[in-house]
Image (tube, one colour):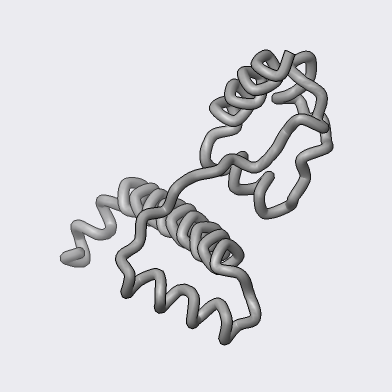
Length: 115
């Protein structure tokens, strides 16, 4: 039975994708049954995904020191950095898409004014 639960969790995590998993980790919302999980497995079995982060001794020392100074765990610091990275990347993608749209929409005017 435990093997079935593990497979169901793995399936759910792969369906969540990076952003969904990040939101779940950020919100600590593992007990809620969402549209992705309906019929798959009860929300009580949704647990955070473990991963190995390989750091140099220097990086680990710097992370440990910074986390201690901020009163946070190293995990909290890494999770915050991951959330910031994804948010900034999403913002950059939206700005790029908007700039491309404006450039295409006003191509003739830009051409007349020498871009």
